[in-house]
Amino acid sequence: MKKITFMGAGSTDFVRTVLGDCLCSPVLRDAEFALYDIDGTRLAESAEIIGTMNDTMGGHAKVTTFLGVENRKEALRGADFVVNAIQVGLYDPCTIIDFEVPKKYGLRQTIGDTLGIGGIMRALRTIPVMADFARDMEEVCPDALFLNYTNPMAMLTGFMQRYTHVKTVGLCHSVQVCSEGLLKSLGMEDKLEGRKELIAGINHMGWLLELKDKNGNDLYPEIRRRAKEKNAREKHTDMVRFDYIEKFGYYCTESSEHNSEYNMFYIKSRYPELIDRFQIPLDEYPRRCVNQIEGWAKERDELRKSHELHHERSKEYASHIMEAVVTGNPYQIGGNVLNTGGLIENLPADACVEVPCLIDGMGVHPCRVGRLPVQCAAMNMTNINVQLLTIEAAVTRKKEHIYQAAMLDPHTGSELDIDTIVKMVDDLIEAHGDWLPKYQG
Image (cartoon, rainbow, N blue to C red; front, side, top):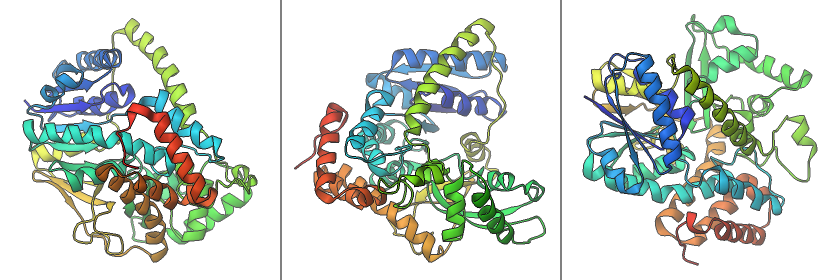
């Protein structure tokens, strides 16, 4: 029996998706699903969901639960796969702090989980926990494959790949839906079938470098024409990425609300009109958190009445990766891996990059891409600078590297002066209290 351990199983929606996908697989449905969390209520609710789904879909799996740090090692012991979906500090208090403290300094965010000051703080409180996971895994399941879904993806995955012996790949939802969403939004659905694509870069800013129809015709000339026209004539939710197509030549993987805060262009206090012009939803992530909490409470009550829960396999990579490793039948993903050997030649070797990867019985095999267009690599580097400095801060525990990461963050640095950035970082560290380790002055 294979063992799949889910770290952060209190992430109710996501544990249901990933393990529901596994239940849809004849190869994985009779595995042990080991659910781990430090919150007893959330763990019990997730176990209830997975148990109901398992019963509805044939009762093949064995579902076990492990509560608290003292049981973490047993949750991991003998695991073949470990899925990571933790959120250290949760929405309340830590996400609220990540948004409200910077707001006092005039710094606004949309999502705050990947880059920017919010992404930096989230990484600093999450890396120590993942380092503990790694130590346990090296002892009790050294051959397990660690599938990281937690943001900030490049920082956390990059830390695991550089500073632990755990076999790690970072996974996102945006690569596999990127070109489909773009073509549908431009009225080019007739080009979906048989299309060929190449995506590479970094997480949340992977570039759709090539997109061809089934006959090998380049779709980009028409995409560029339609995207520019759509941005000119109507308001819509993907205006930032369509502006990327015009200004940088290529579309990228993650949403416009995310990408509006990964640069110095769109959220600017001196140009408030940009918020409306590009339809940027400030404070979007806190709204989503509140809505998700309310939505789950309603769904939980309905589930308890019906005692039945079906699932259709999603587009998430996790179950397909596990299948490929178990069966040896190859499967291709877009994965986050260390840029070892120059997978992307014009990005640093210690950067965590997002490139096509082949999965088989031997694990994850990243594919060499070569060089990105210079402007795309330059955009990626503005983010990689922050990622590498944040990892450096987490490893050395030197506060100066937190300051430097924030100073070099494109959005933060374009809005605030250096002294103000230092004050804001100090305030954030104080506000997070015990959620952060101690840093040297």
